[in-house]
Amino acid sequence: MTEPLVPEDELEFRYFRAGGPGGQNVNKVSTAVHMRFDAARSPSLDEAVRTRLMKAAGSRLTNEGVIQITATRFRTQERNRDDAVERLNALIEKARIAPVKRIRTKPTKGSKERRLQAKAGRSKIKAGRGRPDFSD
Image (cartoon, rainbow, N blue to C red; front, top):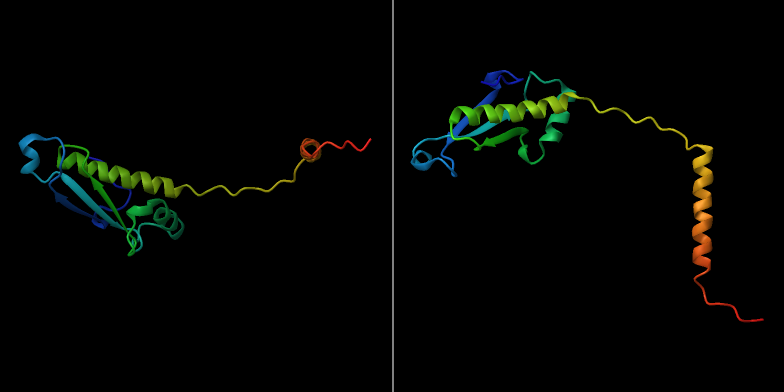
């Protein structure tokens, strides 16, 4: 069983019958898992991670700040529960990595010269597109 990166009591699981493969079992057993995690009020996340997690959750995030994950990939409740926890763990791991700030640099002298030469070349090409001058 996969251990969540947040305490187990912060996760809410609901089970329901899933479609797809499983034969007669699919009509009798609630194997699909709907997991909810209240990211907005979770005491186990620091503010920076919480903000990045809620941004990374995208459409899985409700207006109340709850992340919802539905797992129906496997035929057993246990494996679907682990799948949902693994997907939440992946989101949290992604949110724990702070983005690296970009350091602005000045363009080099050579890059400035190449840009100006390219502009001059384009200018000559466009100047040659006009009507020919037969005033001689």
